[in-house]
Length: 272
Ligand SMILES: [Zn+2]
Ligand SMILES: [Zn+2]
Image (cartoon, rainbow, N blue to C red; front, side, top):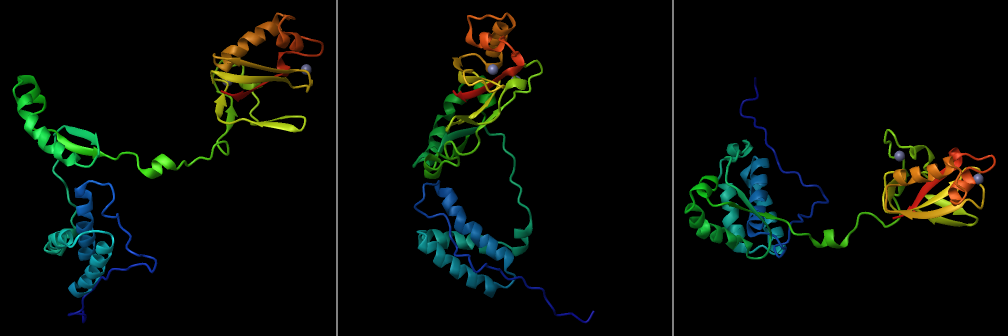
């Protein structure tokens, strides 16, 4: 081939919209996470840019962006060389971290939580004094942090109350007799007024307020009741009053009346 002396070079591409937004240094995060950001970004540029000059240019831009985001010069000056001294070829190899069998000690992160590491080490001798414990925990536990709820999680709800996700469904239970008579419409109309059902229910729901109507549209047949039981269990009781034609129970009276049967019964859930 006559291409000797030719090289492939790879520059870093930055989208026009990239304004190098990073975690602000004052953000409530463990120190090691903040220290990892200048390092990780430097590794990334070192890996992508094949030409040192090109890389240096990007690192200058990165330095400016980090400084604007509150990172102090000392930290940047410490973390940058850690990445740039590494052989570029090594950066393409997947890093595998040695597996550890140390037991994790997980706490929600708080300022100063890193110091627990020393506490765990100082108290290890108590464990070592016990022959069983020392076998289970031969080394101090590995301190691990979990994130406390952030402002977004506390303030923002992804669902608007009562807008979506309201449903009434049959429970698809094999022996459920209510599945066939449950009305799945979440808007209940009476004259010009409507009631919107908020929540997700099925004939298996318990602790609910329910509405029984007649499929033939008899205007007087609106029965509202409440039960702690599951709707499908509770409805069995209503079926019994219909089958026995028990006139002392309004539901039994209507659906065992002339031209009616238990098949005319229509039930829905109003709220819990
Ligand atoms: Zn059911
Ligand atoms: Zn009726």
